[in-house]
Each structure stands twice: as C-alpha cells, then as structure tokens.
Amino acid sequence: MKTVVLAQVLSNKAISGDIGDIYDMTVKAPQIADNAVAGQFVGIYADRDSLLLPRPISICEIEADKGILRFVYQKIGKGTEYFSKLKACDSIKILGPSGNGYMLNDNISEHIIVGGGIGIPPLLELTKRLKGKKSAVLGFRSSSFLVDEFKKYADDVYIASDDGSVGFKGNAVELLKSLKIKGKMIYSCGPRAMLRSLSIYAHQEGIPCQVSMEERMACTIGACVGCSIKIKNDDDWIYKKVCKDGPVFDSEEVIWE
Amino acid sequence: MSKKNTKIKIASVELKNPVMTASGTFGSGREYSDFVDLNRLGAIVVKGVADKPWKGNPSPRIAEVYGGMINSVGLQNPGVEHFIKEDIPFLRQFDTKIIVNVCGHSVEEYINVVKRLRGEDIDLIELNISCPNVSEGGMAFGTDKNMVNMVVGEVKKYADKPLIVKLSPNVTDITEIAKAAVDGGADALSLINTLSAMKIDIYRRKPVLERKIGGMSGPAIKPIAVRMVYQVCKCVDVPVIGMGGISNSEDAIEFIMAGATGVSIGTANFNNPYVTMEVIDGIEEYMDKYDIQDLSSIRGIID
Ligand SMILES: Cc1cc2nc3c(=O)[nH]c(=O)nc-3n(C[C@H](O)[C@H](O)[C@H](O)COP(=O)(O)OP(=O)(O)OC[C@H]3O[C@@H](n4cnc5c(N)ncnc54)[C@H](O)[C@@H]3O)c2cc1C
Ligand SMILES: Cc1cc2nc3c(=O)[nH]c(=O)nc-3n(C[C@H](O)[C@H](O)[C@H](O)COP(=O)(O)O)c2cc1C
Ligand code: FES
Image (tube, rainbow over all chains, first blue to last red; front, side):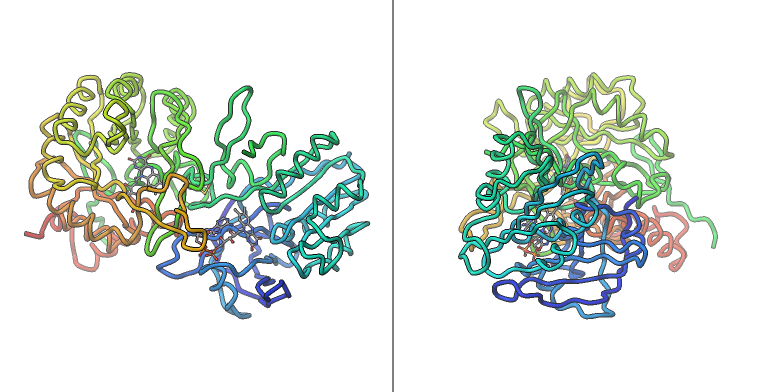
C-alpha cells in the first residue's frame, strides 16, 4: 500500500562526494518504512509550485522498527538543491514505497553487488538483507562514500574510481572483471553504460543479474506511462514501466541499444 | 449542512458530481486506489484506448517545466481487448461512471474501437481527436474543422453510447472546431488537451524529450484553458467538460463559472494523489459558504 506522508526530517548533511554534492538524509516516515523493501524508491516533492513532480529517490536504508528511512542523493538540479537545504525538524512530502525492489532468494549463497556512483545507495539496504557470502564492488568518480557501511554488511568490499584517486582506476565493472569474483547472482544499480557492460559480462559468465534502471517520471506509481523502457518479449519487445514493473529488471530482459 | 446538489448530466448520463479524472493521467484508476476512494468520483476517464496495442514513443517522455510538464507518451496503450477484459470489470466494482477515451491513427481505427465497445458496460465515449492522422502525414485530426466534422460523424454512426469529443487547443480558432464537432454529432465536448511545447536542456544542448516536442499540461496552462472553455460554452449548446491545470476546488469553480458542466483533473494528480477528493470536498464547502443549492446557479455566469 502506497501513501503520501509529511515526513519529519531527522538529519540532512553533505557527506563528501567530489564537490560536496552528495547528501545523506534521514526522515521519520513509519507508514512507508513499514512495508518498504530493498531496491524500492520513493517520490519526494520539492513543495514549490514551480516543481510539481515528485523526484524519484531510492531508499538507502530502512529502519522499520523506528519508522526511519534514509536517502543518499546527489544535488544535481532544482529539486535536489531544495532537498539539500532541509534541516532537522523540517517536513517533506514523500510518496511511497514504489517499485518492485530486488528479488531475494535465500537459496543463493554467493552474491555479487555492483554499484556505480549515485546508484550505490539502494544497494546498502540490499547488502544488509542478503544472506550468505557477499562481495561488493563499488565505483566512484573520485572520492568515495558509504564504503565503511558496506564493510559492515559485506564480506569483501572492492573500490574503484574513474580517476584512480581511491582504489582501482576504472569503473566497477572493469574491477569486477579483473578480480574474477565468484557468485551466483549479481545485483546492481548505476549509470546505464555501466549496467550495460555489466549485463554483457554477466551473460558471458552465465550469472543471473538484476539491474535497477532509471527513467524520467511524472506519477511514480504506474499511472502516466511516462517512464517506459524497452523490454524483450519473445522475438519482439514491449515497453515496461520503470516505476511499477521495475526499477529492478533481469538484465537479460532489458534492450540496451 | 444541507445536502447540496452537485449532480450533473452529460447527455443522458448522470454523474454524482462534476469531478472526473483526465485521460492518460489516472491510468485505469487502479494505481490511484491506494489514495482515492474511487466511489466518490463523478467519473473516471480512462487512458486512451486504440483498436490494437500502441507502443508509444521512446523515452525520455517526461519533461518538467515551470508550472507544469510536457509529455510525449505517444498514447501508449494495450488496446481495446485488454481494456475490456481487465479494466471494465475492475472499474465496475465502483460506484462511478466509466468514460472511455478513444484514439486512432485513421477513421477506421477509431471506428474499430467504438464498434468493439458496443454492448460493453461503459457509460460514455470520449473521442481524442488530437491523435496524428497517419494518412494526412501525421497532422492531428483535431486541427481541421472539416476533418473533425467528418471523423465525429463517422464515429457517431457506430457508437452506442453518448459521444464526447475532446478538442485540441493547438488551433487558431477553437470555436470553429467546437461547432464542427457538434455539427458532426458530438453529445458533449471536453477541452483542453495538451498544448504543443518543447524544452531544451542547455547543458546537454538537446531537447529533454526524445521526440523533441510534446504536449504541455499543468497549472501554467489553466488561463488558456479557461479562456477556451469560456469561448466554446458561448457558442455551443452541448455540455462542456473543462480541464487544463486544475489543481484545487477554486480552479474547478473557475471552469464552472466559465461555463463548464464538469471538470477533469490531470497533471495535479501527480503532484497530489488526493487532489480529486480535495476538489470534491472544496466544491461542497464553497457551495455551503456561499449558500449555493445547485451548481447550475453559478455555471456560465460570466457574460
Ligand atoms: C528509480 C530511481 C531512483 C533514483 N534514486 C536516486 C538516489 O537514490 N539518489 C539520487 O541522488 N538520485 C536518484 N535518482 C535520480 C534522481 O531522481 C534525479 O537526480 C532527480 O530527480 C533530479 O531532480 P532535480 O530536480 O534535482 O533535477 P532537475 O534536472 O532540475 O529535474 C528536472 C526533472 O527531471 C527529472 N530528472 C532529472 N534527472 C533525473 C534522473 N537521473 N532520473 C530520473 N529523473 C530525473 C526530475 O525528477 C525532474 O522531474 C533516481 C532516479 C530513479 C528513476
Ligand atoms: C501523461 C499524460 C498523458 C495523457 N494522455 C492522454 C490520452 O491518452 N488521451 C487524451 O485525450 N488526453 C491525454 N492527456 C491530456 C489530459 O487528459 C488533459 O487533457 C491535459 O493534460 C490537460 O489537463 P491537466 O493540465 O489537468 O493535466 C494526457 C496528459 C498527460 C499529462
Ligand atoms: S512515472 Fe508514471 S507510469 Fe511510471
């Protein structure tokens, strides 16, 4: 069940990022936290007449018992700039939870988690929830974030950065290939180009791979058909909605172009 | 609080109140049922239905603009068979009227849908004439009065439900098109559809929408919509359903004063999923406050 809540901001601060543009926000939203799962997202409203549409932001962490949700987001445009200025005790309108989330299977014992840039946050809650051996490969532009938290829940955490300033020089998929990490399922979120090369790798290695996709949205709940992406359908393809059928898809289904 | 009369009539069909959902913004109601008591709506206008599934346009399809948005969904829909099988049974669980928005690339395609809907359990048909006419090089049906008159006349022959014709605002004189639709047999009109618009991302130096041009909706278009509803209501005798940027009950009342019988709410649902309920309540509060017994006493009161 989805709802819109006026959530109280508990904390909101810049946490590094290359130009200090990555923010970490926690809010009290028990109605949403109660039934959210890893890989789902919410729509956050900027509460300005000029900014009508909810901004899709992934859920980074869920503390259901306390009713707390955590988001890690990049200040990149007008909406996220508005979010970055929120302070503790401010309130913010949030719609959620939306989307399907990652598919978890307790029979799988070895997991590979691959994140790129601002695609990394939703993988934190996922890593927490997965059971078995977990290897996380995280790629950043330059400076890193959330790494210590991944270390708490994953057995191994490998770091890459585009300019080599932290860890391996290159992206997360290149690092994954060079390490030949073993696993039975890949879970990923990140830039489309990264997900695409990851899906080719996963196919070659015969490892099933879940990818979390992005598209521009208006409603975030499956009503406007604004967020369609091409998904294979027998010999043909169909459009599916990122906000409702996704954001997580089987990488074999996605038509990357 | 005495019971006010908010009932309206579109052709032979009575709605319990004037508030409807705008086609394409409310899915088939399902998606909003977590937020909205669908029983309270005057009618649900479902997304455009074609004779066969339409794939729609490539993404990105959504661009936010000041006070609104531009979409290039391209009328993606799973087709009339799917609609009849999946959506009618769902919608009939609720005490609200069902208005089916119909789209087509040719007169035949419109007719195919309307024929297929014969005998089905729906209340009204809304003909979206903003669709591209493929045989005329993709120009919208709704931009030429002769074509409007012809399409409406042809479709009307096969429709077994009253026919609402939904007008495109992308025309020089909306009254000419309105009259042509009524001459062709329209039982009611609805307006406005989206306004042709564009947004450029100056950092990427390209349009935000993959299709470059799309249709604009939302609060910023409301004054244009009010003007067009006003002009159309002055020149035709059929009921008019007004829409374009309605976000609250004051906006809705503005349309009613301009002459609209009913109102539809579209883009505002994306900003506030509860908006339709709030508009219904707000209209009743306004009626209470100003002691209005029947909406007809404020309808079209502007000279
Ligand atoms: C399922 C999903 C999950 C996401 N999770 C996160 C997250 O956890 N952290 C994070 O920082 N970002 C996330 N994003 C991207 C985030 O939605 C955009 O960065 C954000 O909407 C930008 O809004 P803005 O107003 O700052 O930018 P503007 O450019 O001013 O926004 C203008 C419009 O474009 C839309 N838009 C712009 N960029 C994107 C984008 N990349 N994806 C979708 N819509 C966009 C906005 O929502 C808005 O409607 C996610 C996107 C999706 C689809
Ligand atoms: C995403 C989206 C999809 C739409 N799809 C349709 C459609 O299928 N058929 C139609 O007649 N109008 C369609 N419209 C137009 C709306 O029904 C309405 O006429 C227009 O958006 C103006 O109202 P608003 O400003 O309240 O949204 C669509 C609008 C939007 C925003
Ligand atoms: S954003 Fe409206 S259907 Fe996905």
